[in-house]
Image (cartoon, rainbow, N blue to C red; front, side):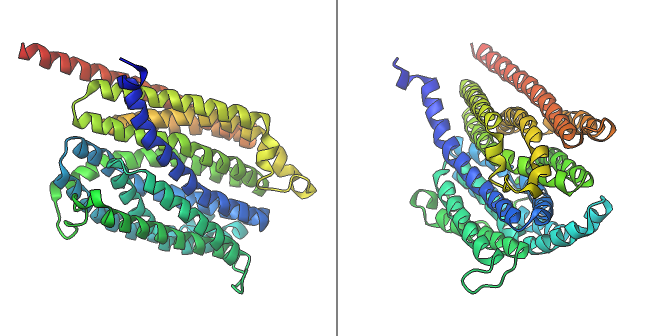
Length: 463
């Protein structure tokens, strides 16, 4: 057996064929928020603070709701691995029903978040700007949730490359829209933060429609007849999506909610602290898209192996993903730690004395943030393997004490009681992520042991 014909090499090749385009798509999609943040910084520190607050609020809510919809990915991967095309179409149609049901309350909540921000002690000027952004972004709920659904369908069927191209096109559209609408170029009005929101909503619709067209017109996917059952309600599949997806949504709520609450705490510490935090968070979010893409690929490969009852394939996919994610995160963390001012300079003019206070806060936060990146990347990839195994309930129970019991509590005590400010809050986050990663790994090893025991029992019974 040569290296290229070995099972590990073949699994690694298939995993990379999914991970590279999925990670690239995630990076490109995160660049929408990144570019928005850069534009906000050019509009002033106050706009940066308000826009960052509004952006993480919108992305947190849509990520939580979208996570429920993400249950389609492991189900479709399993159905595709078992070569059940009709079931793939059924899952897709029930996913659309779920998107419609979840869109309405999501849009209403996003459009009325100003009261929550006021109750959490945010500055009234910051709230006014954030509310302008969120009122417009509410119109992007359906296309972004619909895109999440179809992204799960396409990736579950191993069609990841078109996602990368569509998201990259959307990113370019968003950059152009930001420049034209926020700064009033080519005869358009100078809309500032409202222009950023309008450009993002337009981008979400373009990405969603482009993916619909691809899934309809692709020759291989025509045989799945993905949209043929849209008018049919299949309660068994629909409620299975809810049972599998709800714990995923709760998990994402616990994780992203941790970052959102920490952001609100940063705002309570002042505009400069919030601006510094936004710089660090947006940087980490972009880089985190790589391990997140690997996590998605892990979930798909593990799900497909599960559909084939291939225990070795499940273990290989999970093991290779964890190793690749760790190497990538370590390399990036070292690079950022060596050149922190280059990163901060992307957002603010570091030679401007007015930005000195923000820069001094951002440097130590960024150092702690890269540690959080390593830990968060590991727990996310391991969670992707658990999701592929359709094990979503236990990880939620494990994440509650990790994220909110230890992470948030420690961060609050260090940040406020011990006067460490933003640094203390980031340390608490990192500790919570480390504990979650450890607990998830233990859970994954337990499942491997259980599957191995089951396989041995079946073999012995057939003898």
